[in-house]
Amino acid sequence: MAQAYELEPRVGLGECLADLAVDALIDEAELSPKPALVDRRGSGAHGDLHLGLMQASALSLWPCFQAMAEAARAHGEVGLPLRESLGRLGREGEAEMLRTTAGVNTHRGAIWALGLLSAAAALDTSQPQAEAVAARAGRIALLADRMQPQLNSHGDRVRRRYGIGGAREEAQLGFPRVVLHGLPQLRRSRAAGAGEQNARLDALLAIMAVLDDTCVLHRAGQPGLQAMQGGARAVLDAGGSASLAGRRALRELDRALLALNASPGGAADLLAACLFLDRLPAALGGWAGSL
Ligand SMILES: CC(C)(COP(=O)(O)OP(=O)(O)OC[C@H]1O[C@@H](n2cnc3c(N)ncnc32)[C@H](O[C@H]2O[C@H](COP(=O)(O)OP(=O)(O)OP(=O)(O)O)[C@@H](O)[C@H]2O)[C@@H]1O)[C@@H](O)C(=O)NCCC(=O)NCCS
Ligand SMILES: Nc1ncnc2[nH]cnc12
Image (tube, rainbow, N blue to C red):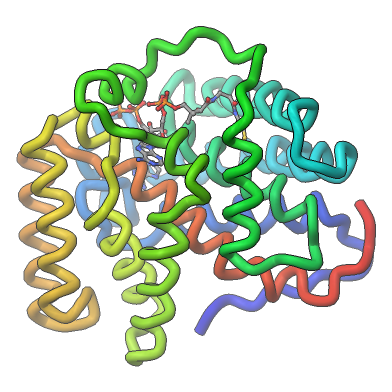
């Protein structure tokens, strides 16, 4: 069963969306067993991350998501002023995350994805369906932030080396891996009777099977990306994480990615985006209030 979110009348829209975003991040972090990622079992392929840090990082981002939603309501439309407000708030959110984690990058991609989606959801509460919200987020992401400092990120280096789009393009296209792969798989697995945790694992695998994850490419190159995409497809083809054969294939995938030091951190962020979008219509149902 999907989690139910009900708005208390006194809770503001920004607070509601920040709750949804943080819940999605915490649910993603706690979901287990995820291949080579931080979960309840341990740190996966990460020497510098653990579950407590992921939870603390998620909680530290609540004010950032609330402020992004409020900025969207204040600006009232997709445009450069909103894009540049979100860029500034995103950079402040990153700084707060790094203060909380003593410099470890836990959720950079998640700030980007969930920040855009929170803003897009706040812009038009009468259209809370995943496709509409993701498309609106994409229109914001297409605008160039003139204040954006020159990047020399892992993602930037990998994009130039392999000619792939990365986190920015995923958003600009309206989050196709979430809307066309993760969400449909989440719903298919639920409908087939998989428990909620297995349905979420299947959604993660559906995203991994098609994502050019710059985190994996940076750590393990093309062999890592092929292992991630092919291994995730194999789990789903074997019957998904709720089946015995699928569980075996999932253990194989975990072992293969750990051996390659390949962590699908981008796919994990997009699973959180998927959970956020899945819950949004129920959370915003009948919303007629203001901030
Ligand atoms: C546009 C930005 C997202 C910057 O993107 P860019 O690609 O230039 O920078 P990165 O620093 O590499 O961050 C991108 C992160 O996005 C996730 N990701 C990867 N691939 C995809 C994909 N195909 N689609 C969507 N998302 C993707 C991924 O995040 C996760 O991995 C992080 C850990 O990565 P890394 O730091 O490389 O860590 P390690 O491998 O562990 O490093 P070492 O130990 O080896 O050192 C983790 O945080 C997960 O979240 C990518 O890392 C955007 O950030 C930006 O422009 N920001 C500026 C402010 C702004 O405008 N904000 C807007 C607010 S709405
Ligand atoms: N569970 C997780 N493990 C490692 N990196 C991540 N980035 C986002 N979620 C993550």
